[in-house]
Amino acid sequence: KMVKVWAEKEMRNYRRIHAAGINTPQPVLLKGHVLIMEFLGEGGWPSPRIRDAGLSEKRLREAYVQTIVIMRRMYQRCKLVHGDLSEYNLLWHKNEVYVIDVSQSVETDHPSALDF
Image 1 (cartoon, one colour):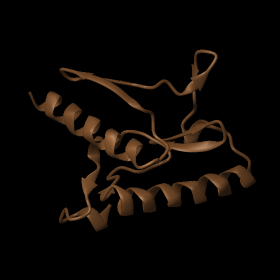
Image 2 (cartoon, helix red, strand yellow):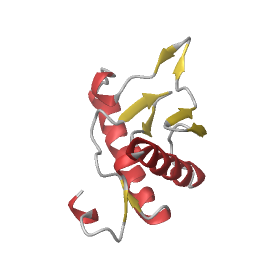
Image 3 (cartoon, one colour):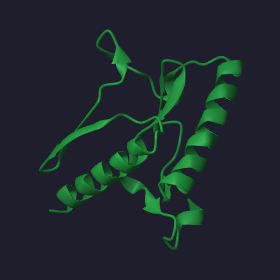
Image 4 (cartoon, helix red, strand yellow):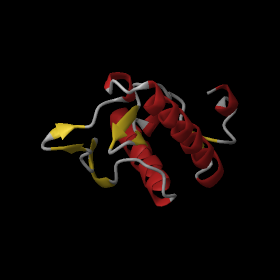
């Protein structure tokens, strides 16, 4: 039951983030505890995590700025703080950062929101 509740929370967060125009895979369907989302990749290969993308120094700077913008928009538009933001939860797709793994996201009024 807990896994289903966790998946429902992640689906709600993805919907809020996607509706706010923030780069994230589009949520498609939640059935039980299985969340289906848009595939980000090319030719059947998934887009890499920022950690694994092998970006140049210039591209890393661009990714950093994009990530700051994502965090700010999540906070201002969605009233969410990611909760587990790292280079493992950001994808590099078509020269843009996409945020993933948003199940740990909390609302801005959560007691620990600013700690994240």
